[in-house]
Amino acid sequence: MDTEAPVDAWYTWVGVAVVGVAVLGFVLGLPGQPPPDATKAANTIDRVAGSVQESAATYEHDAAAVNIDTRRIAMRNDGGTTRASVAFGSLTPVSAVEDAAIRDALERITHGQPPGAVLSEYRFDSTALRTATERTRERIDSNGTAWQPADGVLTVRRVHIDGESLVLVDA
Image 1 (cartoon, rainbow, N blue to C red):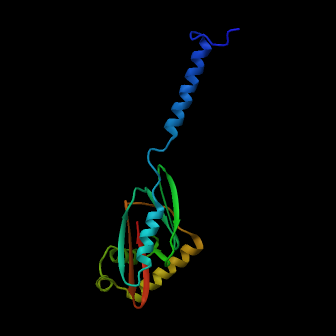
Image 2: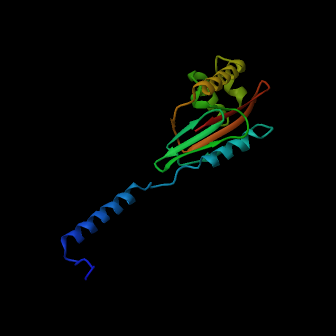
């Protein structure tokens, strides 16, 4: 008995077409890029937060969106989502600060401007700045944070303001 299918049989061609469509669907379903590396971002944050003096660092990434809370960072793009925890400090995500003027001042400080020079240009003092960051961290610990669009560079800076150390993160 002959068990081979004749190549000119219609069901052979239908089977080959079905397999071809399935393979094509699988290939098209694969992500076009790897997920962003949240662990490297967390390591960058830890290097700065673990320092005993004021310091800063940046990390270039390919995330389309980030979610930063007081202890974790999550990053996502078309390739997937990754999460990592930080070991040092309590983070203050600058984008989560509700007051626009304080958020603007913190962005400037995070990106390298001296805190004293920045605060001299605003109508609030360092106490208001520290209070706003503390309230932001408390709100984040209670309610979490939302995903924010990413600009490709994570910036972290540890500063001392009136004896209190702040770890500011902007992505």
